[in-house]
Length: 398
Image (cartoon, rainbow, N blue to C red; front, top):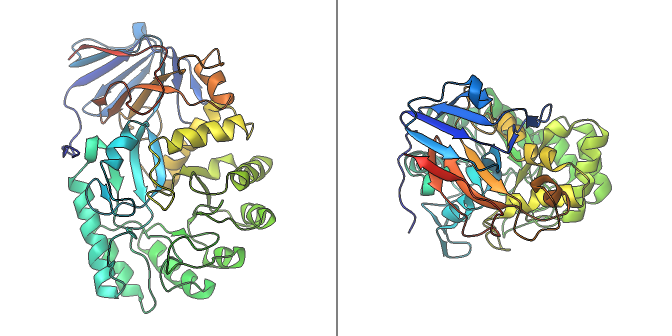
């Protein structure tokens, strides 16, 4: 079973030195000219060259041994239930397994797989508040799970969204997974949610589970949710032309997921790039789902979009870090002062054809993870799920 982890950050100073490649998560400047990070009490304090920074009296020192350091990966689309268990696949410790895929933060698109999920208004609000409270207090492996995302149903009024917001709920589950499927009705509820600071995601494409249905481009445009959820389908995508039209006509976030149509994911990426709007693209797995649980799903999306989509590896990593952090209003995702000290330390996989980690990703390979840090705390060493990395970081003082 996953160990319950305190929600609190590290106390004291963390220094990561001898970084071979530092990726910022920022599309405007994805590679930083720096070899050292200093964090204090779980927040990044300084980034630069070791000789220019105050690295004395550190509680923890990590020698990166020239590996790559990137922001912790963010999965923008998961479906948790309670604890580190998913009834969809009857699997334990799936969140901890994602940690070994470099994921440090997850965002719920609805706790839809709960057996007997309540669909009455009182029940759905209660479930959302319970999930929000539960995952605020319980962090499997240290992973931050932003949960409590109610699936809207017919009959909800403005006061329901106000009450949810006042209770701490900040997300809506996928619009379209409940009884609200018409664009006009969805738009009204999305607007109420937005008024009270609740971010919305809409299902896009064919039905994924019993009770869901087709949500076509016209409904997506009319509903105007904040996130065009799995624009490449979850699982079944809209026609490629309709997906590209959504990219062109909407200004909302474009979410690409592992459990969707890979061909359409690449088409959406190219549409966003042609529009010079890559900052809108974010990544998720849309798991657990019928196709299973994918601990390396975000890494695989990065390698897909780089290897087949023609995006540079460093830019692809930005989609899974800084882009998502900014759109989702998260504290991590970028390596800059004031951000959460969430990092993944990785190197090219052993025997990859790529000469560097970035070249290997551009060739379609996933990297090997040697360490994951969340809130300034080392949460895991060598990943049990990725291929073995060429080099490994090391904790030299703790």
